[in-house]
Length: 625
Image 1 (tube, rainbow, N blue to C red):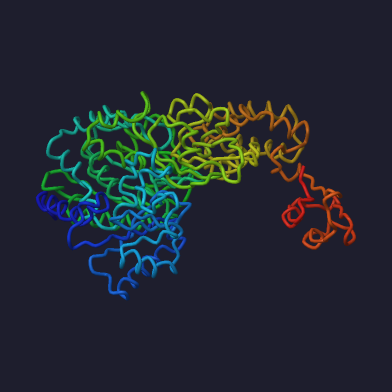
Image 2: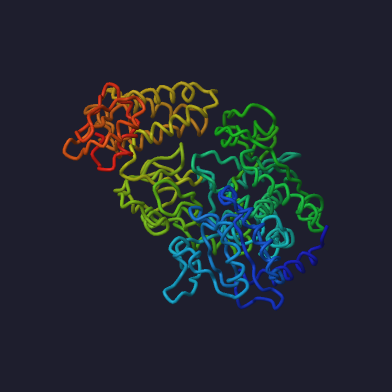
């Protein structure tokens, strides 16, 4: 266990070592360079661990290891460009790095002080060849990284580096200066709302838990994150696990708890491992466990692994799972703040919510309320994916418009395609059409247009996406993930999916659209938990904004985007066909016939609409309708 004075000494010493990552003018004499290698899941899957090892080998081989550190960090955010390496003090940003590139980077950049320009991310290189600061790169320029502040900046497996970045300073401040109610008041004044989806005021939730009188209380963290395409919480835990641990300790002090659990899905092995390391380090340093920082406050933290059930993102199902039972929701009230884990008062927030707490304590609620909108304060992290140039993690002030995210931060739609829609909130959210691209992203604005914030998945779609198919995709996910406890969700979503399947097969009727809408509203008002209540949202939002596509499927028996196979037909233009036979030779069902140097034809009865012929044709003679 370390005293507060010892922790403060570590903070000063370690910051002096890593200051060049923030300010190149503060480089100590004995530090030559820091090579930061992305160690997030995406980059590790692309071989970043081999890259780190190769850097260490090459530095030793070229006798350049003196004063050079190779650090495995969390996610830098620009996942489309991984593996990523950033070299300080210059801040040179290398993208899509291969093991074969390392020898040259070490020799030229570390040895001679000259960045390897052809390997740098092109957006960071100015006309004169100098390196542009990352905060001036379009992807980062409009971001304000609070929850992600340390991701890609520190070694997540080194508590000293976290301490150097003011880590555990907020906990120290709370224990020294604040009474529990004062902590809650600060969070209330900040306007922070839960980042898990519903946007409930965080301070109010803490107040409810504090007001509950009991001999035992729990503090829990929801790291289950089950939305398709969402990886915000995983990245925070991989890149900055101590920020969540420290925040949970602060929450425990505020509500009067001495025990907590982080519920995380087992499919996040890197995050789980780094959490285990961080908890062990925090216990060793005395910032977690008994008599924290020499006070009479104690807090113990455990990890519970989930098996990947989407329903366990719902708070009561999550707690049921922690208790060792099948993950099913419980009726509310009573709410968890009154009767939660093991029927004791329980506070539950998600990873991103906790990741904001320490900065609010250190900088004050006024600092936090200066960002965002009137009713949605601060920033929001999104996992940006789909038909977009810059896929990855972004953290933007609330109120940033969808246009700014898609066109400026995201870099626009590839291939010159047009923006059609963006889906927010995962299976619980809705689709925002191109006509509403200037909508500000905040809780109330999204709800007003039939979508929701959700945990932060943001999937961009272009003109080649079929919105009926998109609705069917998300509903199929919900059907698979329903726990089956209540009839509206178990049966109702299945009936909705069957109608959508019928429509995409060209067998739907206009009456089916009315049935679909009627079912959707019935499920929203009668399902037991949030999963069922929000399951119809993708269908309702697409019916609202893209009803013409539904009508085309039903009346014209056509899929305007050319996605729904049952409604497609492939034809060969005899004017363009050169009779090369390439399409016939590649057709898996021999549906194409003809003679060499003469136009070929497709037997529509045999055609399985796989599209192989169209992809193989060199003369653009085959089209789908």
